[in-house]
Length: 245
Image (cartoon, rainbow, N blue to C red; front, side):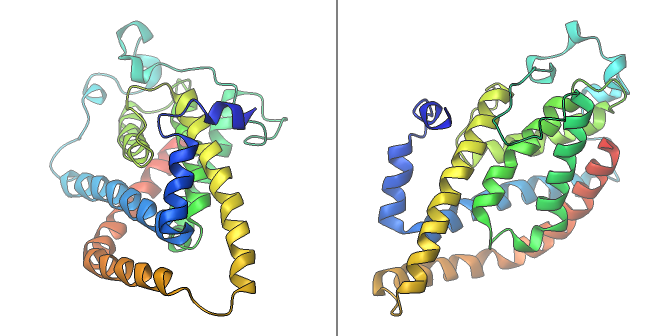
């Protein structure tokens, strides 16, 4: 079922596989994860810098919680969508919206906060778990006690993540969840296959080594900005997750 829906993607499966063949799995994914982290951390760093000035939100100045905010007055992006999540994403015992919100929050915290040091090692899982970020945001829209300020902050992070797969900010959450989940599974399968090949191959392909050198140069250029932004992002992410509980 997932394979069928992948054909609907703006970024088609054939394009991803072609890039994979041209760049190699490691090169393609490292470039993708680098762009994603810069976008996410860049926004979080900016938010932290403005923290002392004033609340960097629009609707939170008028409404404190989602219960205070009538659905008839909300923009489309802030309206809850009942999603039929991909099989395996949530345990079948998690039926209620609040349960899914809690589980998604744990996944997001574990991957992007607690496990942030391992994002480069498991880029394929990072892409997959962006689906949980989408789910966290969507289910929070259905939580009457959720703070509007928190929801607006998560929306900015959600939009940054969507940019990594060229998903429109206006796309429904169900579409974004499917794309993140399916792409993550596809990349995981490729990662496992590539891992087996690496064990059999004793010599390093000169072309791959050359691309690795180029990526190393890029990594060095963004290192300073990444470290500073990551510190700010960690603080901001922990705050958002705690508020979401």
